[in-house]
Amino acid sequence: MEILFFLFVAFVAVGSGICVVTCKNPVNSAIALVNTFFCLATCYVMLDAPFMAAIQLIVYAGAIMVLIIFVIMLLNIGTVDVVKSSHAVAGGALMSVLIAVQVLYMLNRGEVANIEGPMTESAILAIGHTELLARSLFTEFLLPFELTAILLLVAIVGAIVLAKRDV
Amino acid sequence: MISVNYFLVLSAILFSLGVFGVLTRKNSIVVFMCIELMLNAVNLTFIALSRHLGNMDGQVFVLFVMAVAAAEAAVGLALMITFFRNRESLDIDDANTLKW
Image (cartoon, chains in turn cyan, green):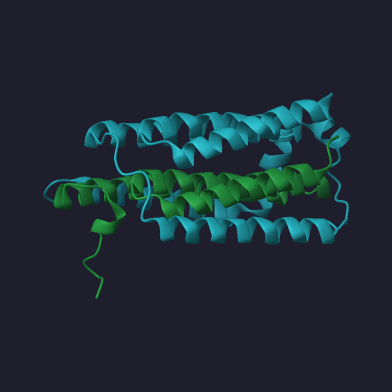
């Protein structure tokens, strides 16, 4: 039953991913991308990561997509040329098929290294996913966390400076 | 519990779709959305392997990837607005000032 549900979600995710790439209108691409984000959030819930699913919906489907759609509306771009010349499409298709074949080949032949950590399903359920994540984030990864805060500040200042008409 | 390989295959397919979009689309906003698609595919890999190996580090990395994606979205879209103001288009092929 679970596998059927996963296959359904994966099918919808890949279908809307194809829509993102092929839709003529950028707004349709954006809506399809939101759909993909929802499907990925569902996958995260299946992987016992509810906090990541919530963050996925809030940050990606909320903030980033609103920003993208806002820019589409602001610049008022309608339906434009879908693709480049045909040899570019052939090259792009070749590259992406090569990447897919390479990854699938490695998955087929390789074995996911099985050094089991302490976070089994029962541990996650007992302690809580958010708390486990916070423990890791505020102890082991404290410095990268602070650096991320600085990165976001720099990005805000940079975005304002770039988008301002006359600095 | 679904095998981790299913999630990795889904992630590989989404990543390849993103690569295809980046290489073939002209509109820079669509290219940007395809990059987001690739980032999300990588996030799915991180979380699937983190769950499979019983280690929380991968999910912390996903948080960092999301923070970087948010920063990238802000700066990238500001760049697009500036580009549109100068060139009156969002076509990738119009960004050719550095082309020899």
